Image (cartoon, rainbow, N blue to C red; front, side, top):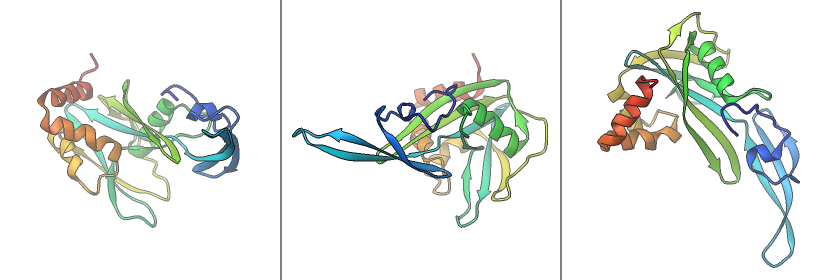
Length: 199
């Protein structure tokens, strides 16, 4: 699955599953797939994998500042994250990222880049697309879902790197990236250039 690939929950090959896999459960966030798998001794068994809807997060910048969200959702402790959310069926990850940024912050950007695609690959298959949106501009008021409380604040680059140690920061797939940038000067400058320069 790529940033421009529409999310088709009917297609097992989109998630790296065998083409003969069958979806046996369709939920609001998770689908369960099963397929017959030949074993090493020649026998056959039913294998199973849960596929979570793909999600996006957006590292939104303006000047040399980065937008961080403080969020609350029912039944969960408060946490910090970047704007983002679920990719809807029929929607490409980049389209979802742009929609989520506008909904949660009222901001848009004309300079987008995929920072990384992270894949959880165990019994659960889950794609997370982390995007950079540079030079963001506010064009509307945020339109927050009833199941969310979100307040945003601007942080600087050094504060961004310290999220690698923040237990309330939910973007765990980004923590290793930030940690490397904290302690490896070449990685720090590489990340700084990616965030603030479109060249």
